Amino acid sequence: LFNLVLEAIMSLALKGDIGENSLCGKILNNLRFADDIDLIATSNTDLQRLTDKVYVESRKFGLQINIKKTKVMSFGKHQEDIHITVEGDAVEQVEKFVYLGGLVSKNGTCEEDIKRRIGFASAAFGRLSRIWKAKDILVKTKVRVYEVMVIPI
Image 1 (cartoon, rainbow, N blue to C red):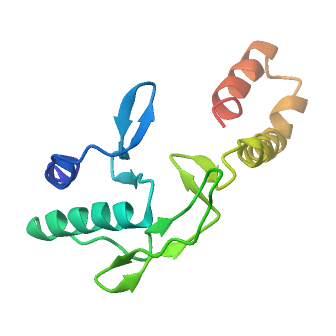
Image 2: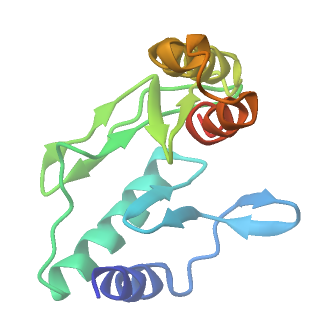
């Protein structure tokens, strides 16, 4: 139910808003998955306008933007300070954040995320060392454990 309400909020907030960003020929001003939302704009002014629209529509449904969980980040060639507010409270500007399990950094590269994921996989592999050493567990079973417990990371 919450996701339906959130979808209604976003549809109303972004109605008529085209945006300037494109990906594979499609205009893009937001990314959404469940309750994770990224607003995308090419200027501080446009991002504040999008944020305000989402705020107004959220209030109509009795919901609020959680300022503590909300972050802004400038990325690309021309990075700048971003000053976005919600109800007069400044949104924290960050250099990186985790979105849908992946680390997004302001330089736009994946290197830091790859290193992070390798570390997680290595730790998961290490935690399973008793299984790898066990002589009474078939190799086929060990491979399956690896595929289920390590590879998804």
